[in-house]
Image (cartoon, rainbow, N blue to C red; front, side, top):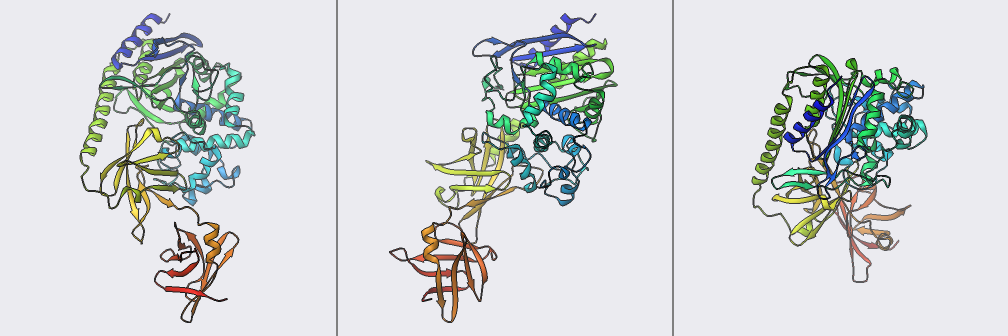
Length: 563
């Protein structure tokens, strides 16, 4: 008989080593749940212990549920995992036309599209339907050609979730509940930490020099818009049922054909601790990493969001399943627990991975802290090129959305996706700032850019390090209807004429020099020419608001003339 008390002792010792407030662990062996328990505290302030019914966000361990749902649909003949996504979504488009034509659901699920993470598209609390996120992929540059490299991408899982919606005719979360959660009896698994059915919820923490600091729970809108990539919130009791099914003991819900699709490597690469001689990557399946651990195939996936880390693992050849939920930010504890429990159940000698993985985690976290400190120390005292009011405004990107900036005292204050309380702008010198994502401990360089008139026209920010910085254009308030009406008419500059008319809601200028060109508001009474970006047009008004002259850059000054 397995030594369950020995497993408990091992869990507690590793929990102490990694200083994690609370964890929940399920161990399944030979179709039986050997252990399903909580250890430590779910809420340090309230002193609430972790129980089998304590809810934890499982983050990217959600991906296997999204992949399994699509595999079930493929088994039923409702979708072909290897046919182009455009067969179902004719409007689907990537930044690269080759990828647009060829990307398949299997590509989306195995991270082989060549699209890097671009995670800040779904950052924050603003509502963004799965379809809209999928439509924005066309505006995001790729870092590699299709199927040439493994690039982890949450957005592609959001696209896979929307594909599920179109195929099933129901929201993604209802499809997952219908095909997986309800049949497996996972009735406590929900799609947001704010779900009213959640009674006991683990609180998120981050370790700091002063002890444990409590982080904010993910907002409901954030959980829903990234749901297929990482939105599930579950209990360890429910995950024990999921492990049993993943090991083939619920073929009425997850048949062998579905499990084969999930667990078969579809792409070389993945996230694996190849620094350890005991571990070797065998590739990435659909929503899971496939490894060799001490010569045995181990299939697992980790999950991380601020304040929580998780892992769900199975060893099919020896019928072992382990799930680990923790309420500490970026904790590696999940890995030695999985490997160590496998060793205990197989009667293998202790590999000492806990100490080695803890050393690696400490080095990586220390290095990250030191690198950020060094980056901040390189800031200089050079003042901005203008008063801070000159930088205030709203800036937009077709995929990342809007970034608004206002002035408060001697600071620029940003708001991005309704998450103003979790981002900062810290001045680096000249017209450069760091856009700081506080919960993610991430600094993104932001540089304001000038237009030809010397005014701030936009900004560039390195939101995705695998590609060039993203360019945001400054958004101007549309010209008023009164101004547009006042500008309509004929103007002369000697024998040259300029006429301005309305075409629908659009203002159009015509001259023998410029031809026909639409005028686009650039703030105040300034306009740009859609067909000639280097040409600006300014309407100068008299005291009563009538147009006194039209100034056309590089052309001349036109005065009102009788029609």
